[in-house]
Length: 268
Length: 348
Image (cartoon, rainbow over the protein chains, first blue to last red):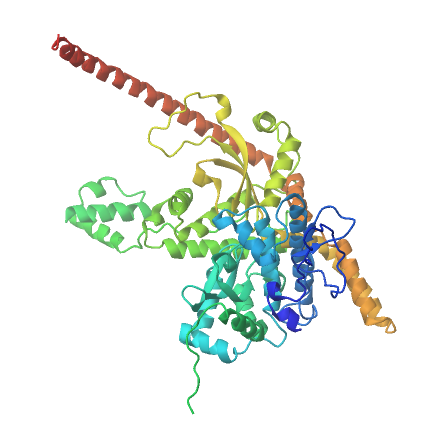
């Protein structure tokens, strides 16, 4: 379970290529390393292949497809994950066959293909794969309620109160027109949490911010369960689905990159 | 004072049913008539409220290709929502008195859209979309439209292929269009150095979210809505039969209690996947059905007629203006030549 809650570049499925000894340009078969599950950024080396291929695989959500009932139906997950997410992965792999981009982790690939605002064709697929991974991990059965500990403190510091943050999040999601995502991000430059909404496939990684929670506002995410009642969908997400446990883990990791100030150590 | 009551009389006179009133009541209000006009002043001020126009066919007439539920939802809720939001947003602004197309172009604001834009554009787009369909539609176009299609795309099939591709590759939400391009650049003195008949041509365009080709000064002829809502409605329709059979099957499954759960789930998933449309093909199939069974080529032809007439009118106006400018320049040049020749003689 721990594996699923960490962001992809952190995952232990990533295997760096074994070092090639100097002067001997020999490919050694990968042995002695536990067989990785199909994950991102793996370089497959084999004696037969003369060309190094990289591919990305689909990850499964860290819960069964019916675990989020009745808030997100099994049918939605089957369609959303099984068809949409899978198709993004397949399209990305197809595109990468012809392009020179390989060997990146998913996060690197997104930044490279975003190309500072002039996205390459692979960007949409790569970003959507990552976004959906992140989205599945942002939810849990029995989720919602209040954030715990450090996250709650930070939210109260940056939004004045949890309900303020919740209102901002819901408002931002309702104001989104078309397809897109709503995020709770930790801004690296301003060193505070903030709510951000993005269009289509864009994700805050491209600006160097660290996402903490994501909500998919593409119609395919909620149409089957909520038709066009987006407010109900967003509120249900906040009350019953969002995984503050995942948010806490991500915050912990983010604090290694962003200095959020002195910790409040209680004085005896 | 007289002027004020005149104006208000004029204003209310237009809205109220006072067509039968004698015309000189506006010109010289007598005390009696002034009282009448004062009564008219109390009538409600004119506001241009956009209304939700129904499709020109009953909601169930597009069955079985587009179900009544789809239309009720798409028109009755989404389209209606946009109309209401638009009216709310333009109330009290200068956009209120404009025609819908002008509101769209004005609120697009040359690329930095104002808040009413999405609603105005979606109202216009949906109106256009409903009118682009008809019960028993489809088939092939004829006449001028077919001639232009063959001139600009090679063949009708190629145009279809390009249209489907545009619709399928529109990432996120948006629209796919067939439009008549006879636009003028938005620059003061843009002149086409080598004008030809082929400058005015049919094009296929795709736009994101609510944008439509009016903002580029094209004349749209045909639109298809490729927001995911439409893909879903289409999927619902085709899956209806699948789910009906699945329900029967799962009922039988429950009866066989000795079947292991894993096998049951996998089998059901397998059957669903076997019948589900592939994501790439779902939108393509929806657009195919739209083009084969729903599109109204008569309407498209009539729109083309209007568009070509407008382009011809513009060309005539441009020609006239160019001739006027030429005359002006010729006159000016004559004066300057006179002055120049005067100066030229001096140094010598």
